[in-house]
Amino acid sequence: MQRKRLKRFWKWTRIIALVYVGVGLVAYFFQEKIIFHPEKLPPNHVFNFPIPFKEVNLAVTDEKTINIIRFTVPDSICKGIVLYFHGNRRNIERYAPFASNFTKNNYEVWMMDYPGYGKSTGERNEQVLYDDALLVYRMARASYSKDSIIIYGRSLGTGIAAQLASVRDCKRLILEAPYYSLDALFSHYAPVYPAHLMCKYHLPTYSFLQKVDAPVTLFHGNDDELIPYNNSRRLMKIAKPGSELVTIDGAQHNNLNDFPLFHHKLDSILLLPPK
Image (cartoon, rainbow, N blue to C red; front, side, top):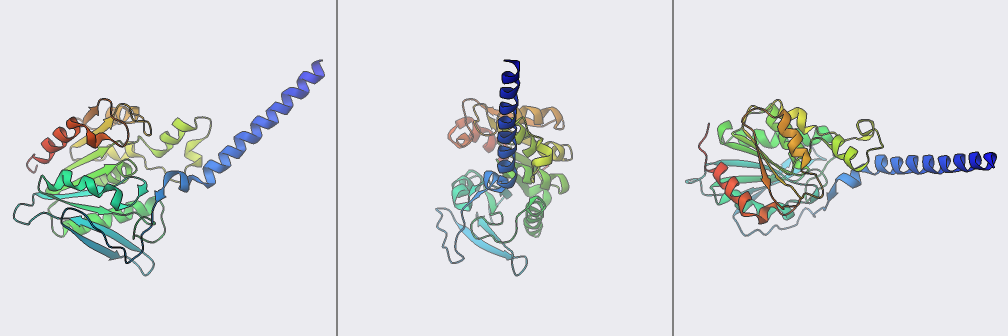
């Protein structure tokens, strides 16, 4: 009897080990597909948005182009610019409707697509995401002073936006549904795996926030089913004094824009004069 129990024990141990290794291998080798959900667009695709815009294709190299949509307002009333770093799905067309949150307050909005998204091309890795964001910032600085630039990140884009604000000055950093880090998010969903060793993308938002001198505002729904609300609470513990967490009661990951409090707080921020 004892021998049978021992044999059964080792049998189940091997099965559990195989499942653990198998799932871990899938998570490691397919993490690009887990994190990124791009939708490519042909180079001749014609954008059609209800607010005025200009399309810019920034040729970085022969193999790399950054596609940027500039949602414009008349120069006579323009107060500044919002550099908007979007989430992980589709391309600019998914996020374009949110540009009006800023243009109605007389801010121009620049949205860039990450490599492999929309019309943007080239290889994608964590450093490339940071470098592309910096290129867009430098373009903006050619026309706008640093105290007229708001850096805005949504979901995946929050880590990119926070990194940019940690190395360049801006009027304000705004993060919508941010994560503490991608490592921490991985650990939330797969706590039995060594996240830091397995993740090819880390995007440590918490580390960047400690280096941001501009005022910081976080928006997060407390019913967020994708990036738990606790990520923002953890970020607030290490954010510099003066940072603000705006909790949208009942909001999930993709519907903060449906809540009046979100618009009220965002409008109040955009009405603030330069520092």
